[in-house]
Amino acid sequence: MTTASDAQQKIEEYLTRLRGRLSGLNHDDVREIVEELRGHIVDKAAGGGEVTVARVDATLAALGSPEELASEYLTDNLLARAEVSRSPLRILESLFRWASLSVAGFFVLMGSVVGYFLGGAFMWCAVLKVVHPQSAGLWAYRDSTGDLAISLRMGFEGAPAGARDVLGWWVVPIGLLAGCGLVILTTRFAVWCVRQYRRSPVLPNG
Amino acid sequence: MKETPAHDQQPADKWEVQLRKGCLELAILAALWGGKLYGLEILRRLESDSELIVSEGTVYPLLSRLKALGLVRSEWVESDAGHPRKYYALTPAGKQRAVEMAGMWARFSSSMSRLLAPLGKGK
Image (cartoon, rainbow over all chains, first blue to last red; front, side):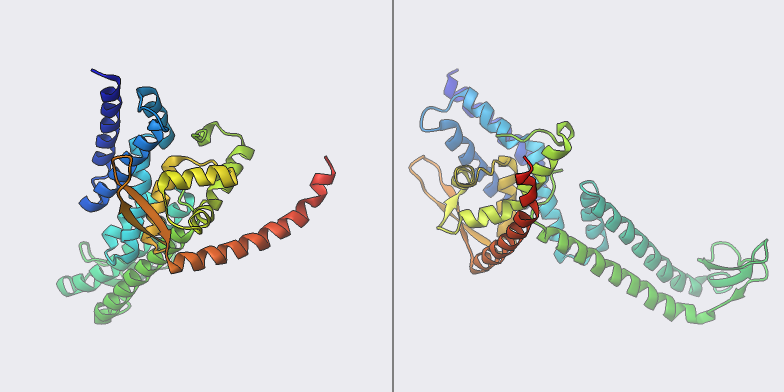
């Protein structure tokens, strides 16, 4: 085997690993990224002369591992999709990625999880009030210390002893409105944060 | 030149790496001000004109992001090297962004220079 073919094999191994890690992107984007980097590696390793294994090794080392490089492309792609997405699942997937990179991402993720959880709980409560009218709803009662407590119940267990149904059937429209509102507000908050982050100078390395 | 892993760096080194990375978007837009360039040319321009030595693995994803933001456009051009090269050029939005960032940089640099002047005299 010649030195040139050894060098070529190293390039192809690197690009194959990179291609495998970029599987989350669409086919055309992956092809463009791989071809651009192939050109970069060949141009730099040639350096006006012959492409040698040593030069290819140095060039690949300067680029970083395929996993690190793919992570940089994928992070921005995930955030870009979140920016135009209205799907809570897709947004949360992107926020998990962001949270793995920065403290700011972690706090945005936590805020969004709480927002979606509360929104979902309100909507579920509204729906389940129809199924369990005697136990689902927003209940006010005195706890063991005599303090006033509020509990949002889905109806899978009985209402607290001596509790008063605060909203009655109004929990259905109010729960749906509050739940939808919370989900929409949380989505807007998350998308706004992602947009600000993507406009920042450079995403941190993964 | 590859950057030292962040966990091996002293605080001052980390700060310098972050400073360089923070300038990278403006540096790339400025490098493209004179016309279209492909990735390796941009890297060489950054090294020769600004001594801004950055990880090559950072520049290509950033170019991709600048394209997604509409600040640069790209086109494939056949070359004598035997493979096509992806050239980048500023869009009108990219030119506007470069001018805005250059203005911010000039104001920031000027105010920091005034603040830091006593430190130079104290050497």
